[in-house]
Length: 183
Image (cartoon, rainbow, N blue to C red; front, side, top):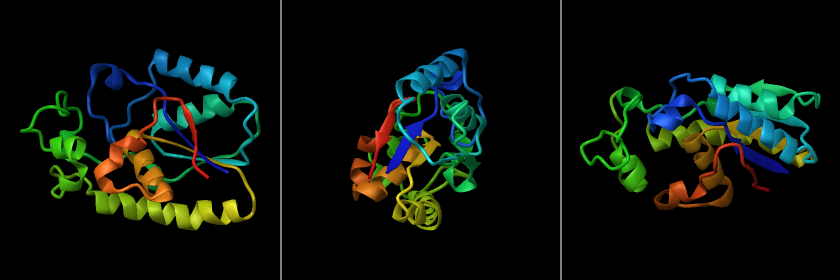
């Protein structure tokens, strides 16, 4: 089985700031969410956990799996989508002048990333490579794999696994610290 989870909340989530690759730790609320997820999913078996190298995902994985002996392996390909100069912005969702507004409003029209940002093509290439190289062989062996990541990065994996078109990219979203079974 393949499972995926989004990290717990951060202070930037509460402030509605665009995080991307900015390495923001979990907030007290985020740690509580991970503890609740730990109790809620205690009976779900995992052989291995892959996570983003960013602290909010790593810490979520560590809390969730504490005491279970499940290896947690960070992989750079699971980092959040890079939003470049838009990271740290607020109001990015509804502001049509924002360099990332198309990303959230009409993902299929997000063809020019914010300066220093990542395109969907780049995001899908790295997460697709990760799925092929690391996840698929384990699934073929009957292993239970957990990925702990981020909003956009997780959506890219779900879209690839479930064949969801880019226009519906955000329909694949997961709430913080909720577990989703993919295959």
